[in-house]
Image (cartoon, rainbow, N blue to C red; front, side, top):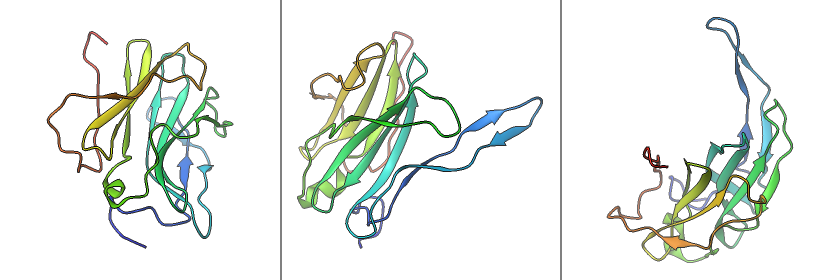
Length: 168
């Protein structure tokens, strides 16, 4: 398989979750690792996963997914802040799946919370950053239509973060 952060994820790359709980003083409890998304032994894999928390205490995971042919972003969620929550797929693909070479540098997600919304920003195969967002109170499968962000950052970045300002 190809190597490097912009390469197609090789098969067997998984996404893991592990809860950390702050105890009294400076003590922490580290819970056992849970596999949230499992790649197959031969064709599928996940990479560049990010996690975010919305205003209703729901966790969201967005990850780059290679299905053996196409690369796309998948989104999963849970409202169980436990050591081994049950995860639900929010949408089959947040962006348009692609199988072209430019797709190797695209489909990289980050999560941002702003006010009573949570959004996923990602670089696209069109050379622009795109995003979709939802109200915390929306059904878990509800997302805004895809929009292009107006910014001057090259889409070749394979890792980026976003924060909101005080206006949300």
